[in-house]
Image (cartoon, rainbow, N blue to C red; front, side, top):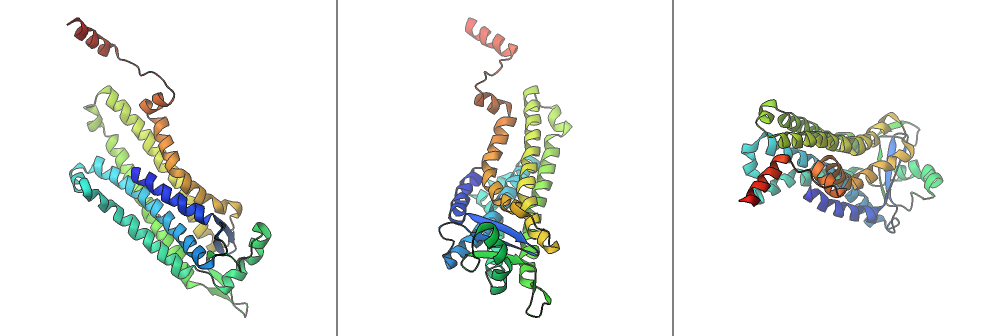
Length: 292
């Protein structure tokens, strides 16, 4: 999570420069820059694409976090392959996946004349911005040509459903699979039978923490972004909900730390300045040592 926390600072920096606004209409959705760079077309488009690539790195790094837990707890013999500098091998998948997402957005989703006109009226009405002047990227699965014939935009299908959704599905599968297997291992009766009461209690706390840590990103990051990409295929509009994913992604590192602090007794006691309970046996041991 240290790597995730450090990366979140970079993500926040990109988000500040971008200040993305997202809107869905019919068979498409637009993400445009709303910062002081909104009218700097070339720089703004790069920032919008970089923001999307940063989100891909964010979710893939989260998946790697669960993968690392799985290896350490369920495959301890393989954990030695991640010791020292070897741990940087875990960062290869996030770099590769975010680069693919970045390139797909840059190649397929950059502005065009028909995309500009498609979103222009609603963006002007709701946000008082003119898409002809904005730096943006846009997914538009269908559009009508000059003859009024509905045309499939192949590039946007490849980028949206063929690449972005598949990357998210891979990360989501990794999180659910590794989280479930880790939970099973930590809840193994043979493993816990040899543990002390305090260790078993700590494991129960870790079980609950792991469940919440799995559900939170699924509900706040994967599902909202997945809906944002998939629903325009069916011409289902999301309204103001379209802007939720970027907010949730920025909140996750802090929320994840808060989950751990509140779910683990020792951390919670320190937070609320509660004194740790001392077991009677420990007092007896201390007393006998003082007498001697």
